[in-house]
Image (cartoon, rainbow, N blue to C red; front, side, top):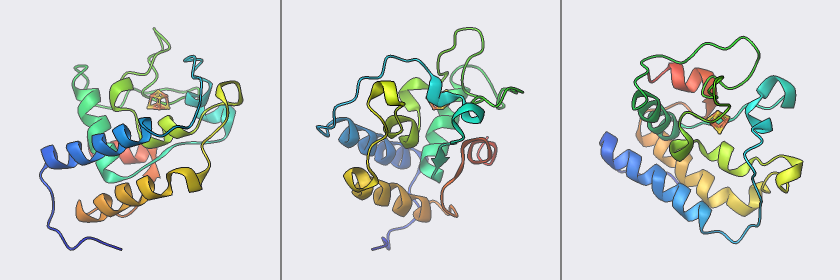
Length: 146
Ligand code: SF4
């Protein structure tokens, strides 16, 4: 079901995305992430998170809050938001849904889609209201909104 609501303001969109992240965190799905950042090395895992437009806007705002205006360049196939100096996510509080659901084996493995499908639908519905064209791979999704 798609909403017929108008395009939300950036503030309203950020709030909607954050509410999805909040509702996800409230789910009783046990995982134990120890910040190994394996999942941030896309070339090694063969998996890249896909972001809806609301997620990308929130991540871009998080990146700008660090003083950066563009996506940092990386040539090792890792996420451009993984700080090479600290090996930490530059936007951890605003990290996308995929980064919150795709855990490495050591952390307990990825969430099953059926466990979070309602939350995915909320992000997709917001994407449509924001004029997005569906989830895009993280580098392209960020580049399109920076
Ligand atoms: S956004 Fe952050 S948590 Fe997600 S893959 Fe990139 S560095 Fe890792």
